[in-house]
Amino acid sequence: MESPLRFILFFFVVGVAAVYVHIYLYRRLFRDTSDSRAWRLTGKVLLTALCLPLLLSWVVTRVLPSAFAIAIMSWTWMGVAVYLLLSLAALGGVRWLVARTRGHRGIIPPAPVAASGPASPETARTPSLAELSITVPPPAVDEDRRRFLARATAGGAVLAAGGLTGYGMWSAFHPPVVNEVTVRLPGLPKALDGFSIVHVSDIHVGPIIQRRFMDELVSRCNALKPDLVAITGDLVDGTVSDLGHSVAALQNLKARAGTHFITGNHEYYWNAGTWADALSGLGITVLRNRHVTIGDAGGAFDLVGVDDWSMRNGPQGYNLDAALAGRDPGRAAVLLAHQPSNWDVAAKAGMGLQLSGHTHGGQFFPFTVAVSAIWKHDAGLFQEGDRHLYVSRGTGFWGPPLRVAAPSEIVKVTLLA
Image 1 (cartoon, rainbow, N blue to C red):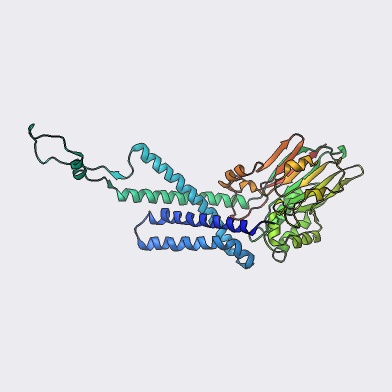
Image 2: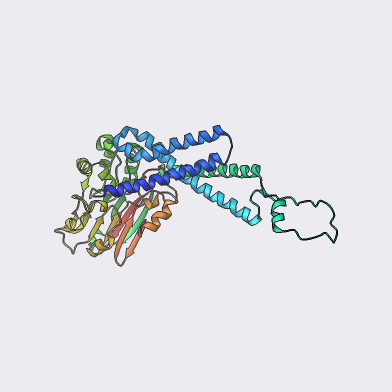
């Protein structure tokens, strides 16, 4: 179980960062662009009104599910704020570089001090430093030019952030791309050569992703004519009573070997056991630290499922040993694990392929860069020897409805003998 202290520390750090970001946005967008008291007051009120719901959204939506509308606006603003911050920093950097190159930063050089009269050779002398410091006026700042540059920078940042946010939202709501990969699975019988698995992950059915999205997703999965469908966690962000109708679309999936599900960390926020029962009621096989055999006497492999890695220390969490108990180690195996953690151990335990998600591939820039730095296996297909790992970028999205440089995906994996 995750430590409460860890959650508190995480949200404290995130909260402090969010406050400082909003203070920075106020200074650049409002304080630096006008001396008007009304304008500055508007900025303070607006950014406070945008910051507070963002700080409280995670907690409020768990106490008041009806407050999800506020959360959606807050999460969308989060994406806008990130791109405003990046745009202001980039344009400010360009502005500084140009000023540095030209040797001029909005400062008017001092005018030369006029001589009081012609000096004779007898009276001419070199002025002292003290005299120079008194007679040479300090450089004057061109306030009009500085204000113009501040407004130009703010306007450019707003346009850039608006464009990136618009593209990101279009990409998020655009149908997931289909990526097809082939994997040679050690020990797979020739009778199952060409067996196909459609892999979806991190759909995050919730206040934004609902039945219409799910119906379209099911249609696209069925068009791939899979032998098996694997859902590797983070299916939902809400309760069974609120989201049951949307998730029920999954019972329309058509696959010869059925649809199989494992938990992700988000299922534990909304009672993983209740969701496991609900999905079982839809005819979906829920693998909680257990395995099933796919195929028949003519050829088979094991499909192994584990609970989420983040719950490995809890009473019901990741337990690879329990999932493998009683399994024939000579049979080919595919592991479903929400997070791409522990892959090296799973591979040594005989898992020829692991299907995971969780990372979203970063979901939108610049988090794509951060996730790539944090996770050794952030997105895509990885191979070590004859063992493979595929990490999905996710089929939906979480938080800000944005996808930039990390489009959502449906993955069709074809197994080769």
